[in-house]
Image 1 (spheres, rainbow, N blue to C red):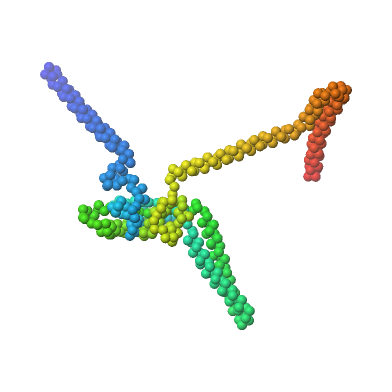
Image 2 (tube, helix red, strand yellow):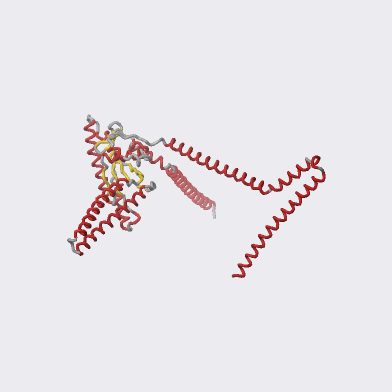
Amino acid sequence: MNTNQQIDILIYILLFILVIIVALGITLFVINFRNKKNKKQKSISKKSKQDLDNEKSSSLGIDRQSIFNFMEFDTIDDNMIIQKNGTRFLMVIECQGVNYDLMSKIEKVSVEEGFVQFLNTLRTPIQIYIQTRSVNLENSISTYKEKLRKIEDKLNRMKNEYYEMKESGNYSKEQLDKAFFELTKQSNLYEYGRDIIYDTERMSLNKNVLNKKYYIVVPYYSSELGGENLDKAEIKNLAFSEIYTRAQSLIRTISSCGVRGRILRTNELIELLYMAYNRDEAEVFGMDKAIKAGYNEINSTAPDVLDKKMRAIEKYIEEKAMEKARNTADEVINEKQQRIAQREEKMEDIINEMAMAILRENEQYLGKDVTEQSIEKIESSKKEAKEKKGGDKNGEKKTTTRGRRTIKSNQ
């Protein structure tokens, strides 16, 4: 092989190495580019959901805390809650839900499709408000009692008619039996109604029976009317037309998933806000009672939540202090009782010891012989008492043993 051929071979080898180096460089560049792209996507995905929601809300001009502003209102008129000096209007739709868990698979799919359709048709922001209330059966009980009074009056009339028919003697046995049968039916109806009222009154005493109500709050802003020069009355009328159209559209849409809705009237809006402002006292000072009493303003009677929490803590502290004081006093009393019982058990021994000590102290007056004989007599009486006590215990044991043996022999 000559020199030219060797040079050509080396050139081919170098070209092959260069191609490999270029290919490796391109591969590394692509890998680095993909890694940078993935890192960028990960950094974007690490944004919290709250930040994304805030960005979306800010782009729509919605405040995330606006649901709390639902309770702040200027007045209630024409089935609307008017806020912010007539620049914001709210209409509330009460929804009657469906029992999703009891539905078949086909019905569940239908409800889900209807709800998706409801979400897709939304063109304006809405708010969902849930209010939990204690079940108030006072009106139902009053209605039952009124009907029961009518049944009782009819029963008394039927009793008088039956007794008159019976005393007159102008009616046959079949007519009397028929009248008695009707009287029995009416009497059973009266007893049944009285039992219902009794059970309902007992149920009303349970304040843990709760009911949830679901609402959709539809807002409208006066700024949506444009830059026209309109007075407040015209703005309110136009706002009512627009918001009413939106509410009716929502009612038709949610009906596709089996949820019935209706627009709350003015009095119902007042009751809704009254329940929100006066959760604790709403059962005592009901909205219907306030309307009958002639009140035309809503006042909040609910205490501040921090004051309420402080009172609960103070009550808990007082209860625990009373419990600890009672337990400590009981312990001290028990200790005293134990000491008294021990003292009573050793009382005879203490008396004997004190008697012998007194004799020794007065030995010079009594004489040595009298003192010694007295002490011996006391000690002998102590021994006799101990022996007697031991004998009583043995006797009790023997008696018990004999009793057990007798029982065994009888068996």
